[in-house]
Every structure is written in C-alpha cells, then in structure tokens.
Length: 235
Image (cartoon, rainbow, N blue to C red; front, top):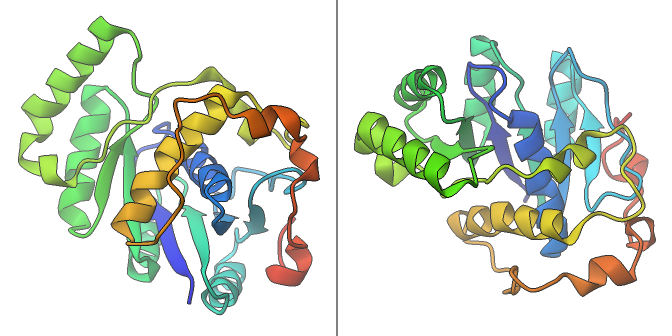
C-alpha cells in the first residue's frame, strides 16, 4: 500500500510546491517511487519527462479522488499532494487522507503566526522551515525567531530546507536534461528524514559528496514508468 504525504498550510508563498517537487525528486534519488499530485487551480501541470517521479493532475475533487485511489493501490509507492494555499476546507480534506502532513513556513512573523494556527488545527502535522537563509547571521536570526515563537512546538518542527536558487528548475514545465549536484543533494536532505519518519528503509547516501551519477547520466536516461499507465490522469 502506498503512503500519502500532504503539503498544506493556509498561507501562500511558503514554498509548498517547491517542497513537494524537491521531496519527490529526493525520493527518486533514494530509489523510492513517487507521484507529485497537483491540486492548485492556479497552476498548470508539469511535464514528468526526465523527472525522478511522476506527476498527476488532480485539480478537481473528482480527479483527486481517482488519483488518490489509484496511488493507494500501488505497492510501495508514495503520493505527495501539493495542497495549494488559502483553502481551509481542502486542507482539512487532505489532512484526513494523509499518513504524513507537512506545513512549510518561512522566516517571517506572518508565516510563523499562520503555521502556529495550522499546528493547532492539525495536531498530527509537522512544520518544516523552507527557503531558510544560508547566510550565518540571517540563519541565526531566523532560528532565534522560531525558538522564541514556536518553542512549544519544537518536537513537531523538522530540520530546515535551505534556500537554493536551482530549486526553481523543478518548477519548469519541462526540466533540463541534467540538474546541478547541489540541488540533488538538497532534495535528498528533504526526502531522507521523511522516509525515516515513515519508517521506510532507504539507502544511506553521502549527500555531501558530489553526485557523480547526476553528471554521468542525463536525467532523461533514468528509467521511468509510463505515467499514463501508472496513474492514468497526469497532464
């Protein structure tokens, strides 16, 4: 049976879509099969060609039900549902479907106020700092802000996903034939703790070492199941 992960949250601009695609790419790099599910009416489906995961278009309630049912029937697959923003009813619906719920937030007072409300609303959810500053002084300030405002939830906050400019490549309609090694490593850093939380065995990878495979093999050359055969409603 597949695992369902939902990336939700009431506030827009927190990086839900970027996180969803980084997570799926990282899962693929760790030899896990996954589907990134689009539900945001304001976005267009992305081409699965060359990705380490499949994509599914579930922008209607009926399509979402069909996609989730299809994923659940796939052995050892993972469905990552990008929940979009400002849709409280949809968030509650996705929360009820998921084995794991992630609430991304950025280093602003508004983000932290919103994620605090979401943590109260969704008691099984985990918060994850996203697009986190890499500058030492900025990171120290961001970490202090989290500790002062979200200290009571520290056991429900995952390690931050640091800002990396190349992550935008995953949001292109069609990704380049090869992706930078720092992006591959960042995606692994996102996926590895998620697999640990779900108690799914995965290979241990030295994510600080250069990903020579990514340089040696173009992304389009990696084996990939046919998306239409697996999910049926993709793009």
